[in-house]
Image 1 (cartoon, rainbow, N blue to C red):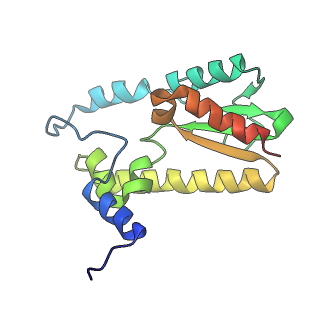
Image 2: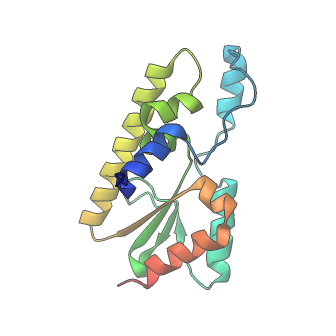
Image 3: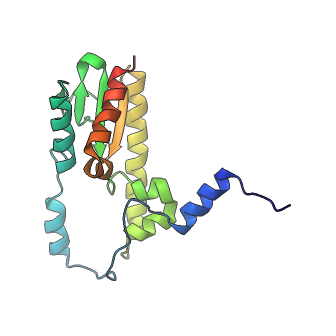
Length: 172
C-alpha cells in the first residue's frame, strides 16, 4: 500500500512550487532604474487614504458602523478605529508589510524583490513584520481587538473584507 502524504506536507510542497500566490510573477526581466525615478515612484506611496482603505471604509460606513481614522493615541496608528467596540483595523500593503516574506519566506520574497539589494530589503521587511507583531500584541494587551487585512484582499473582494471586520466587531 502506497504511503499517502499528510495535508501538512502537501501545503509545504505547494508553497515551494508556488511561493507567492497573491501576486503574479513579473512578465518582463528586471532592469535597474535611475535613483531619481525610484525616488519619484516612492514619493507617491501613501501611508493613509489609499484605495483599499477608502473602499473598506465606505462599505463599513454604509453598513452603519461609525469609526475614527488614524488614531495617534494608539500604538501603530491603526487605519480604522472603532472605539465603541474596542477594535482596530489595519489595511496592510502587501509589499511593505512583508506578505511575500511571511507566506513564502526568502524564496517568495525573491519573486518580488529582484534587484541587487535583496538582503537590504529582506532585513527592512523583516523589521516591518516584527514591528507589526509587536503592535498587535501591545494593542491586545491594552484590551483592543485587532484585525489585519491585506490590501490585495480588500481590492479583490471588498464585501468579504467588510464582513470579516463586521464579524470581529460582533464578537464580544
